[in-house]
Amino acid sequence: MVIGCLASELVYTDCNKNQHVLHVNSASLSPYPPKVPGNLTVSGQLELGKNISGNIKLDVSIHKKELFLWIRVPCVSGVGSCTYDFCSLLTSNFVSNGKVSCPSEMTAQNLSCTCPIQAGTYTLKPVVIQIPKMSGIVSDLMSGKYKVDAKLVNKDTGEQLGCYHVEITLDHSCSGFGCILG
Image 1 (cartoon, rainbow, N blue to C red):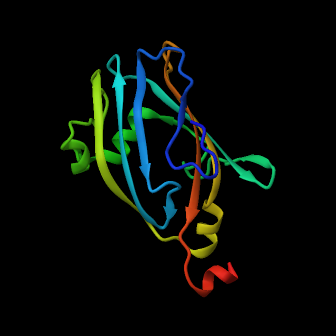
Image 2: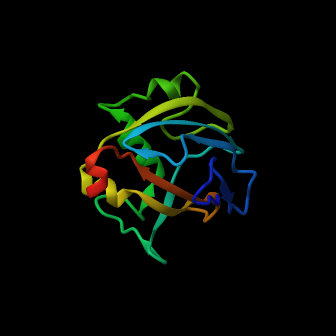
């Protein structure tokens, strides 16, 4: 995904060697660039060519542009440039006391929240996500240009299931006298 500073839509690059396993047909963010805080409408469609389960890792590498350099965002408390156990990540976010609690936006569209994820075409109809207000300095630090590389790999076989490169800009909402000072 390549996005210029004036881009009006989300653009992404599929770096997967095997596009028959996982392929994103479409992805959309509105407004673009996303505002922090603000409401973000997300939609998209992907095709999964085979079931996903087992020992799957998600490698995420995030770089933020500072002046003329791209600086790697470190993995801190499980956020940033981290490697995750994909199925455990889903379970830790969507299973509580042995019960799966998928968000209604996902269950209404037959999107799985846990492994195994069955092969098929998955469509996320437009859903609004609220990006929360952060303290002034955190909001300022979050805004900017980012490069994100994400790879989904079967650790047992070494098979790359998916790979995407995304360039995205985050903007912080600002109004009034605080913006002049900030």
